[in-house]
Image (cartoon, one colour):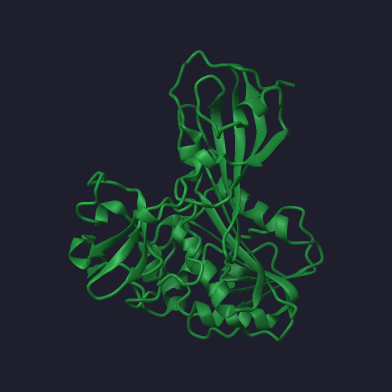
Amino acid sequence: MAHIAQDSLATIYFELIWESSHFRHVDAYYATDVSFTRDILPLGVKSRMRGLGPGDSVEMPLDPSEIPSYEPGKILEIARSRFLAPIVHGRNIKPRIGRFYPQRFIQDVPGNRPDSTAPFRVVASDRAGFKADLNNPLAGRKVTVKASVIDVRPPSKNAGKLHRWPVTLMRGVGMQARMEETPSDFLGMHPFIREDETNDAEFYSKSRSAPLLDDQAIENVKKVYGRLLEDGMDVLDIMTGSASHLPDGFKPGSVTGLGLGKKEMDANPVLDTSVVHSLNEVPKLPFEENSFDAVICTASVEYLTKPFEVFEDVTRVLRSGGVFILTFSDHWFEPKVIRIWSELHQFERMGLVSQYFVRSGKFVGLNTFSERGWPLLTDTEGDDRKSDSIFAVWGMVSSG
């Protein structure tokens, strides 16, 4: 078995682990072709990984020098006239409290490039202007990094390019956490309307789209469910169709599907029972109280037009300690996605779903998870495209 040497190439699975006021967060990255000769790794990780082989890992606090300290001086008073956001969906984007925007939206930020994609957060707002927090979204937080060895290979004859892995690992991370005391303003300007408001059942009966998750992303979603579900659980799969995303080898007590298409659900190989029901028309679930141990929702939360009502009713049908798990990706069916979804950064979408949980006030053990960087399962030589990033948010019904 190969072990990491000074000139090795390796595949490393990185996890950044941290907490915010309501959630525990894990942000993972599958890093291929990590060079122990040229690449920059989180401080201290490279030296501690030498001599390790597949299955080994190191875990340590991320060095404070790699997470910028929080600087109050980076909170700037900005006049509304300097907010130059583009028009999206035919309307002007406004700076809303708790939301993140690219710094290029602000005119004349000292020391900033006019095309900067670095994020800033709106932390206060009134009719005259707003306060922009230019600190890194992870600034001031304590972060643990875990690096697990997947495989080790001899050095390549191709020198390749230097890769700064800390930059890749932390890009976007932190934007899912809301401010300590103030919910993010996701709800302005009719966030839950859609491009196409025709009847959902009728629309989907005539419309078919390509799968929204590639094969590797589907496997990654299955692994999320596999970590959280236990054999014997009664599972409700909401907004489901013909495909199962439950992990191979999972032995549920029962699996009930709820969706728009009977034909599609009849083709789903794991469903014991199916119910045709539109949550956008009637957000109340057609089940008795305390019916399930787990409710899952795959690549569909972005189509809910009444999410708060649905989350509230999920707590009714879940048994005490039951878990509600939602997974999604960067892809969606445009005509039916809610307006706010397509306007958010990918990590902010976890923040939106997190807010659904927090607002209900009935969930504990709240978590977010992101996973990026995997190669496609159908990867061919020379094809460096990546599998779809996947994101998950979950919580358990409080027993109190």
